[in-house]
Length: 146
Image (cartoon, rainbow, N blue to C red):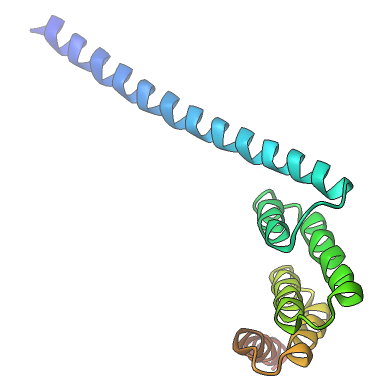
């Protein structure tokens, strides 16, 4: 009887360790894929072959890695480029500004967040998400100060 109980415990322990190893392997593979994507995007960025949709993905990956400055810089670079070379694309400029405002809001840099939300609204006064974000930020500030 003791022999079978020991075998059952051993089997359960092995199954638990196997599941743990599988999950750790998946996480390591996921991290490697993210790092490879960021490395490839940095090469494209250095060659100036990166597009706007890739920058959103890159900034999101930087945020997941808690590299907030890099995420902000990536979005600001594209915003500056768009302001100089594609200033008629108000939706793109508004979305980029709103994204920057969201990042600054997350890191409690409220004055910068307000600036970018207002910039987004100035590009496109119908940008509901930017207006909503600006309203929520003002409410958050008034609650903290009041």
